[in-house]
Amino acid sequence: MTGFYRPRPATSMPAGPPPRRGGHLSLPAACLVASALLMQAAAPAALARHRSHKPEAAPPTSVAAICDNADFQAKQQAFENGGPKGDVAVHICGTVVAVAAHSSRTRSGVHGYFYVAVAPDISIRIVTNLDEMHTPAWPWVSKGDKVEVVGRYYYDSYRSQGIDWTHRGTGRSWPIPGFVTVNGTKYD
Image (cartoon, rainbow, N blue to C red):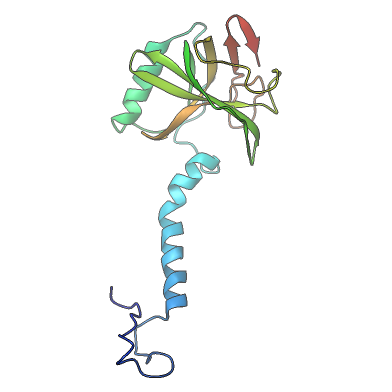
């Protein structure tokens, strides 16, 4: 790696700091430059989750009145095939296949997480904002529960996708109220 100081073996190392040559950075300076470059490269992905960037399309204004897993799978496939990214409204239903044992505090509040199978080989992460929803203490869903979810589907990458905004509140960035129905009991 050109520009980084590599110590010489102890037998040939002169006393004092390494000699400075034009164009080379000290180790602390090189670390600062490297971290700045990494932060710059990571900025688009970080902005995607923070929602501080402008969406590529206007937010949706409606969602299917009934569960439509085929619509969700079509949207997911379009994103995976490189289609334009943007948050989309979805209305899914299925069986809970996994539940996080504990809730987590994030910058936007306390959240509970679970996964719903929408097809035999497809499950999706559900993000519930427990500070916004009227629910019992977490976890209020269990593996095997039948659920129906309305929310905002986000797709940042194959490994970073899910459905959030599953509560009744709306805002400037998301106009559609969400909900989660568990075995017939609706939580919003």
